[in-house]
Image (cartoon, rainbow over all chains, first blue to last red; front, side, top):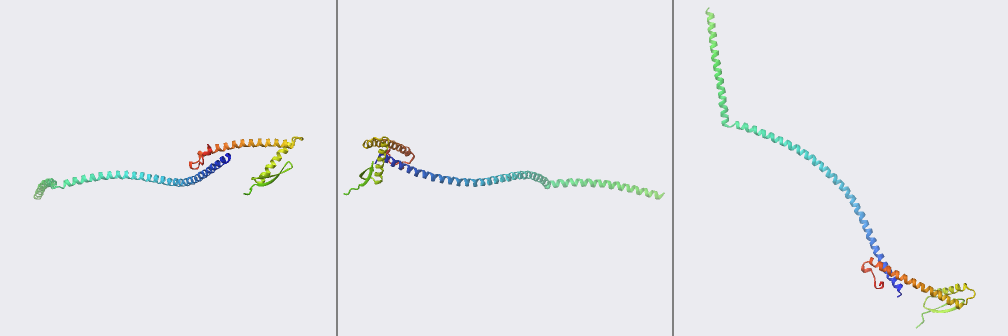
Length: 146
Length: 103
């Protein structure tokens, strides 16, 4: 085979193989381009979903903040109610302490003394009134005899 | 065994020649026409030149053309080999072909 023919045949084979390689690269590039477009579309859809999720997160955070405020209010009300309960419990304890048998005996003794004092006072007044009535009756009888 | 060569009749400078050749008739006629045209071109430059001398000058000119074309062909062959050696690294090993001719 002539040298130029051999060189041409070799070059022809290499160029054909190179063409095959380029065709493969082109197919892969086209496939990658199509895949890239597909992923871009998916990404665009996901961006929309992401915006929705962000909005939901913001709404949830707002609800959480409102719930926190409400919880603080309820906590304050609970503290107030606990104080009230403690006050009522103390009052109840005080009343209960007073309602023991000893306390009742003490109270009855004090009441008895008060009643006795009033009785003495009433006897005193009755005696004074009786004396005054007797005096007035004597004065009336002396006037009728004159 | 039969002779496979074709017989082709050509005419150069008015004389007819019968040639036996393995080449095609078209090729043989084209070669004869080229020789005839070259001799006539040389003779057109001088009114007193003999046909035999013109034929020798035509042979010299055609041989000069042949050598120049061979040299150019060697250059093209070298360029093709260089191009092949440039392309070969771009291909996977299985597709690099016979590298013996590239050396």
